Length: 182
Image: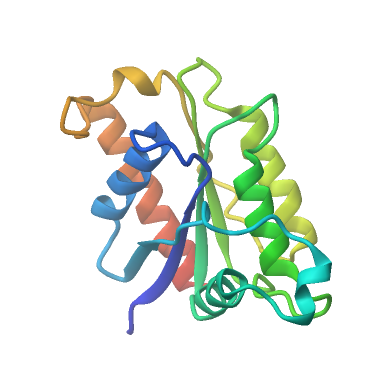
């Protein structure tokens, strides 16, 4: 069986983002059947239909990359009970021009990460809601809400908690099963 290529989109753009640290842990813990790569989204100009006459290189490159993968893993914080603008912008850029969405029909999953106790619960569900419209079937279980993220890492960005490592490993095993049986 060939490896499934998975685009990992991280909603937080901060250099020392807890979301990016979790994304890197998910990549490390993924089964060999998956090939995961973080696809940057911070460079994308805000979506503007007027630009479609001569789309920016960033749009073209992003769409090509997303079209080439077999599935998606979204890792996001919660901003004001929603998702970061950069992540929503990536959804919009990939869904256009109308009728040419690069998201369509590929499996996805979401992990939400927060320093708060709720683990970005609202953002997790908003990603799911957006994916319904983009026709990205989302893994239902297990759900992943990672709270108190500021306590999970050492100064090198490695996980301190074996319980969290075990949870993330089980999550990635379930995700691999989801993608490979899709």
